Length: 413
Image (cartoon, rainbow, N blue to C red; front, side, top):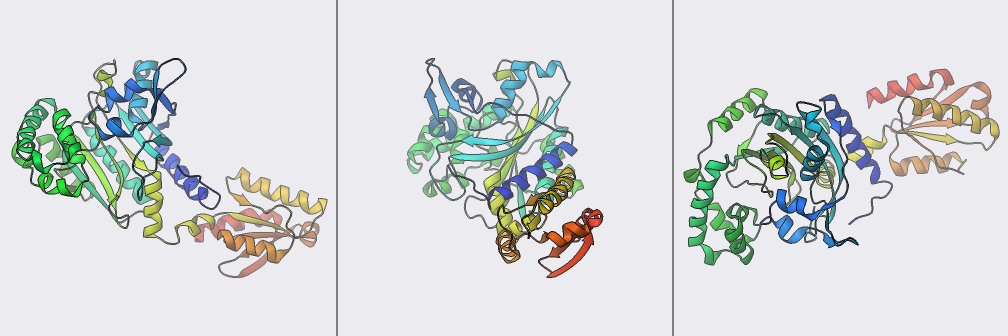
């Protein structure tokens, strides 16, 4: 579980801000649920045979002798909230997005944290048409934040009738290969054979890759219809019949997006349809779909694809550099900062520093591009020395024109 410090946190703030702008423009509202939920919520929804429930959840008994769990994912929490608060009695369908920490006691490895963070979307009480929207929304969001080298993977898990036949056929196949499976896979075989596909153990992969899924369950007509719609939308994809996702509540289409440069743990986001979860939690049968993306993985992918990713974020800050210590300059600086933040711009200051060289050093450390230099002369004349550190250009402009000049400069970067 990591601390996120200044210099790094700005990347997180940028990603979160982009998510809020993008998803709210698409008609989604933010939802926040508690970090702690009754353990039963996750065992009922995620599935006792999943790795998450079987060996990754942070579960403990509280002072009231209740079994409680730090949330390992958010969909179950959102479903619990919708059912508990009767939200579907107030609206025909619901569209939520969320941003927040999740917790899994995973083995420490690249891209895996025990406290990790997700941004996700839930489209609730909408049918198959929402599958395309959910996939397109995720794909376009990743492009919106600047991630271009991505791969969309799809699979069709089928509806419950077909899944019973698939499970039976897969159980027969893997039972014949039982001696070649690891102990965890042998346990999964007894509990839920689909979970065998989650295995990352090298020795199990030949058996998994050879499973004749296509013979057991050919792609459905609804899935083929989704394929055609993706082609129309211009969204490239690859069918991966081994993709099952790590949660038992999925049915129908599931999907995952991977990014280049992240090594073996290259999945940035994933999701799928889940039509039985609300009923399993005591509500009515409710069709739903959604996805989540890992913030840590997304930032890592952005940095791999663009080494200047962090610099581009800081270039949109304005560094305020007072070079005189006087009440007049302080009031003048306060006025300029107030105008900037009223317009939603981010400012950076270094309290107690009044030497220009020191300010330049600080600004360069953060990679800030634009600087407003204010001394006694500027305060007296009603001007600002506006400096572009990248172009190494500086010009004196009137205070009343400063905002316009700054906004003009941002449009060019």
